Amino acid sequence: MATGTTTRVFLARLAGMTVLDPNGEQVGRIRDVVVMLRGGPQPPRVLGIAVEVQPRRRVFMPIGQVTRIDAEAVFVRGRINVRRFERRAGETLVITELLDRRVHMVEDGAEVVVADVAMEQSRTRDWFVTRVAVRAAGGFRRRGQLHTVDWDAVTGFAQEDEAQGAANLLAAFDQLRPADLAHVMHELSEKRRAEVAAALDDERLADVLEELPEDDQVEILAHLEGERAADVLEAMAPDDAADLLGELPIDEQERLLALMEPDEADPVRRLLIYEEGTAGGMMTSEPVILPPDATVAEALARVRDPEITPALAAQVFVCRPPTETPTGKYLGLAHIQRLLREPPSTLVSGVVDTDIAPLGPDVLLPELTSYLATYNLVAVPIVDDADHLLGAVTVDDVLDHLLPANWRERPPSEAQAHGA
Image (cartoon, rainbow, N blue to C red):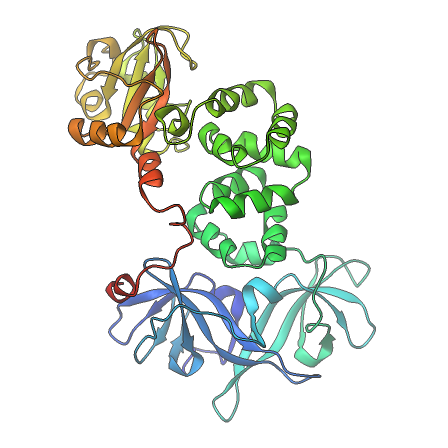
């Protein structure tokens, strides 16, 4: 196997790296490296790589199929076994399990944290993990200083770390989108998932929670201290926070809502009153809302906010003050395509579409689906009996409810995998 100018490869840098076939076509991306730990000081044997192919399916590729590793990609040969990767007994995943593990120096027993490991090829062309990059865990040399030592210079890999961190794991996956990081976390053990969640900041964890299956969400929330759990719920979109709280017992809902800031908890409380499967139960209470005297320039500035999802940025809802939900009288919506064609100084009240009637919060999924299809919309305005805007249901909210309940965790069909 060629590896450019070096025969030593540090494995954390492989996380997320593109995998290419002999024709230069993308096969997928590396999510982990599979090794077999051996007894005593013997270096682990590298068995292969876990590759994520579309649509979000992990497959195993033996290390013998890897022909070259360069700075940008890993090149492989041969056919891909599309069977979903399942770790076998005795196998260890380097990136998600070994990084951040606390081990000890053989020489003086000092505790260190694993930042990375490196593999090298032997004369028999097998690959072994031979080097370990470690940082002091406290009291060993200068804290934070990185040292690379031989594999047999450290001990303790075979013992489970009861309080393993996740800083190096997250550094390896730093560029992943929330949905992709959620998929990585879903594949972890409950213990490791809790450790990764603890290491994420509130905003990042909120984004990832919104992409996880409900069981994982509830499990992670249960591992968080009350104040931290409340902070993460505040960072989530109100509809996603309400969906998550709706999975908890009433007393636990109330405990967490009481820990949240009142202005963050109030919209979540309002959403919790609606039945699941209704427009009220699916809507977000934070669409883009402007008063009728706002200009097109102001509207475009609002929808440019990168924190707003594409579905919500596709239209502006025009209402009389107040413009926080529940608003004053709902007047109509302004499509972004229309806004782009108008002079910046034009008032949004002059370009508002009043022909599309809003829906009520008790409307059920079939009517929402028909509404979106009939009017070619990506969001539905939801109003109460007095025409106050309560929120909006986006097309992604509808898809979430149309797909099977376990769609985030269900393995794709074999036909889909072959099509990838």
